[in-house]
Each structure stands twice: as structure tokens, then as C-alpha cells.
Length: 165
Ligand SMILES: [Zn+2]
Ligand SMILES: [Zn+2]
Image (cartoon, rainbow, N blue to C red):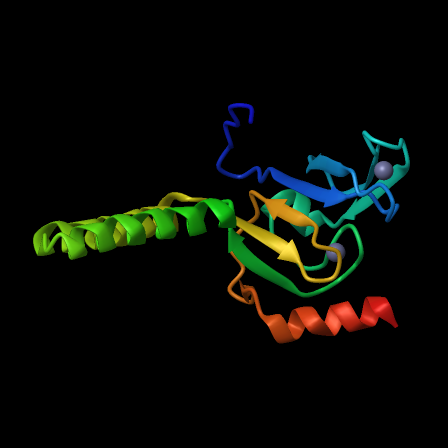
């Protein structure tokens, strides 16, 4: 939101999470400026919210464990609304099929090619978010971690059943 000028050595990680109160689920946002515990309040219900950042996260921006729930598994997703992405695909598919039924084959392929280009642009330029499987806290501005992959349903279900039981 704010113009964040990031120094070369100083990582600036922001965490966004949900209120622990299941009837509230207000959005909380914190940035990590130093190692150790830090606390804030839920903007909706005022419940206290605490995180515990290790030195590695504060200094290098590398996520090892979740500061909110101590979960250790994360996935990476693009910081781009999935619904908007889906809408783009639908709009382009409709336009392409209109061209197709008008037998404007060049226009059909140009439309599909444009979609591929847009998809590639999103892939290249949209920032990535690291998300905790267990509590769905989102970490922005973190260092790339090769141990984190994209969303895996089996891993996610493992945490779903654990929280139910
Ligand atoms: Zn709350
Ligand atoms: Zn977590």
C-alpha cells in the first residue's frame, strides 16, 4: 500500500492473518521489523494478537516456521485475486469463441495468444505470497525458499482434519 523502499540487506516481511476468534475472523496485518515477540489487536473485536518472529525471518526474510501458529509447512501462491484470474480466462474464452464462430481464425488465435501473454506477465511480475498451511497466515516480502512449493491439496487436508479432530 505505502511506497516501500526496501534496503538491500533489510528484509521487510509483512504478515496478514485472521483473528483467532472464530466468530470474528477479522483481518490483521503486521510487519516484522525486529526479532522477538510483537503484538497488536484485532481491529474488529480488540482481541490481542501476538507473533513470535525468529531472527532469521526478521533479518533475512526467510520463513522457517509460522510466527502465528508455529506450523512448519508453507505453500506459495501469486498475490493476485484468483477470481480476477478466472474472470480473465472466461472473458478471453468468450471473445475467442465469438471470433471462432465468425470464422475469424486470425482474431481467434490472436485473442488466445493475448491471454497467454497476460498469463505470462502475471507469472513474471506479480509478487508471490507464502502461506502457512495450518493457519493460512500470509507472508509478503519474504526471501524465496526452494523448499516451498505451490499449493498441495493433500498437505492442506492433513491440516484440515487435524483442526477438526
Ligand atoms: Zn477479532
Ligand atoms: Zn501458521
